[in-house]
Image 1: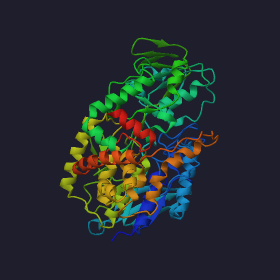
Image 2: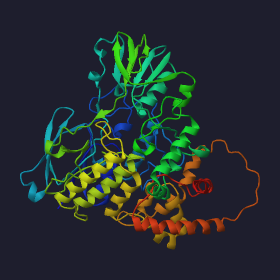
Image 3: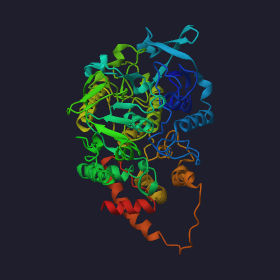
Image 4: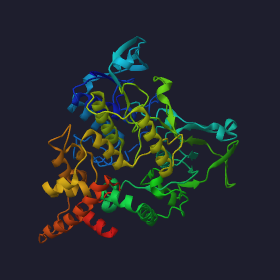
Length: 557
């Protein structure tokens, strides 16, 4: 029987995995190679090889209610899109609230994870670790959860850029970037238009003579600030929208693209990609259009070659006297401590059942948590994976046969490659709410909206029409949290709270009745619930049940 679990890494995925183990009565031991928690979200003044790094100006793309842990709402006073230091603060509060820190062994690196000789009978693993001082130790665990992420090995494709070896300036990967110090008055080329490339181009453009952003394929650019100044990811991430997206995928995508082009014409700005909006992760950046229109950032096509201090682009244009090149070209992923047999691939992704379990193990006692991407925050994805994995460890949930798991992995990979733009650098992507719901179904915590409509209409409307916040997965089933309903009903209060730094008095108005509105919306919601429950699907373009969400909903029809 599984009791002792090794958790590798103390970032977001590691912390929520420790908690999932404790919730199921397991005994977790977490090994963290650095001296502190946080993983990616712990800023480091100097890059630490083998660990994820961020730059000083990083602001999280997901708003706090979307990236919250399901039974731990962020403090109301925290900003909606937090600075990396505030994300780390939230993680510390989470660790303290659930007493996670006492289970972490810091400055302890996992060197290898091996199956024991009697693995087929016991499912046990030998985990070899090394302390900072060099002492090695091998311990036996009943199960292992891998939470090391995939932003640790910079991908620097120098062979794709002829002449780089004789480039007269300086070049480095975005992994090495901390701030714009030393770049005052420089001419800088940033290669790659992912989120890091966009952020770094904007950051450097405040001090550089000129920044050139080289975009091979373009990108859709969205802002953190949505309609009415609300967090953008709260307006368009509801279950209702997922239903609409599944019914009318092309129409919804075109509407989103039209809306983005209304803010600024992506073709005019040189950013328009060949792919549709939902095919690839967008760039989240509020400042990039302003830096382009002011001339501080100039968008260029892919780099053809380097000649001395000049950069030649594929359209024949040349930028002379370039001082610095920043390669924002993504990351390679690897798990050097795992046996190679557990690192087989299906397409570009690891061959993992539901992106968690290797199908070839005779005993399902190793899980990968947090190696996932979707149109939403990683916290809820990793948390749901950990909740499912620990229940599999305990035998409360069983996996299909190896043959059926492999068959589903191959089918899932084909669907994913047809739907999304996948590559070595972007090996996987999931439909956010449907993926969460599929795991929630296995755990037994997927909300039953039709039942909620009959029992608690107010809550049901928030769950169906409002943003799909993680608290929905604590309303019922294993791990049910008594505070989940209140967390959902008060989520907009926590959104509004950080703005209340200068309260403007409102003139007295005659109160209006909302009963007829609620009845009308309830009727429409009931019809949608029948469709939703019959098709067992969900939505990913949120409509918020509030005054502004009703307006948005009316606009769709």
